[in-house]
Image 1 (cartoon, rainbow over the protein chains, first blue to last red):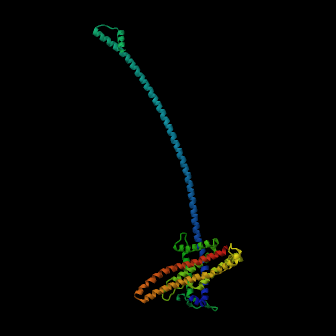
Image 2 (image 1 turned 90 degrees about the vertical axis):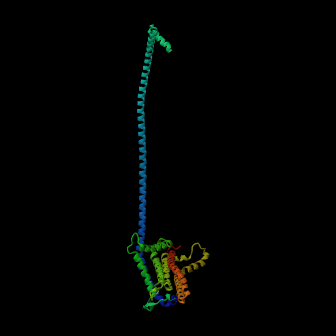
Length: 162
Length: 250
């Protein structure tokens, strides 16, 4: 195995060059460049965290605004409901009052007309009795040639009617 | 075994020590360059909404940072560069060793992490950091690590040495695990590839039979890539766990 056979003859060279290359790697690359890499990585993480935090804050604000506007909307809706209900009630009362007036007028007119009708009926009925008596007297006179007094014919009509 | 051999490319000797530029050195530098290109390419102009490359770089960062915050906690942030360096060096070196650069004549892939000398240094870096952090934070009180809570006093003569040995064995297990995993995986791939070649050379019906080890080789290669990633992950997470001992002394 050359690693062991050559150990004595090559260890100095191996050690020397390994220390040089590893030294350059450690001081020239690792210590010199890694902080920059770390800064980039951590900067990105910080930026992402900050962005997420601001997004969360914005969401919270939006939610609060939503709550406020929802509250306003609900209030406005309730108010509008109240207003329409009141308007409806007044309109209904109005209509009822007007209807009542018109109803009363119509009822009065109807009563008046009925009264007139009854009066006319009564008048015409009494006239009818007179006419019947006259007619009866005329018929009697024509048939018998006897003159009847109005009182007699009226009594006869009344007797027939009864 | 030739794939593990170290060849000298340019001779360098300083103060009697052979510090030659070898194929191992070359692959260490390629590893370093690959990580550098990856990092610079992804972080050239970082944007809030990242592109694909930037996502790749960031995901490695968040992976390491997440691993440390899970094991060590908030204080683990300080060790991100160390764990990142260990993880990226091991996973890149592992993967580069699997690259089929053998297609280019004369070129051979070399797995830096298949060498005990390399994995031992990485383990010492990991273990040394744990010791340094532990003693710097807790002073000699760090030795209380070997005295677990809730153990009756008469068990101490037994428990303390066991804890001490298990602690001291950590760098060896770190180094050996990576070294063995890489070496074994590469040997397995080489053996299977050798089967294909020898069956092809046999000719006739046997040459057709070479399809079997080829299919196996494809599967094992995928498995080997998984092992490359897992070994890097294991090394990184164990270092994090050990650092947790040092930072948050139970």
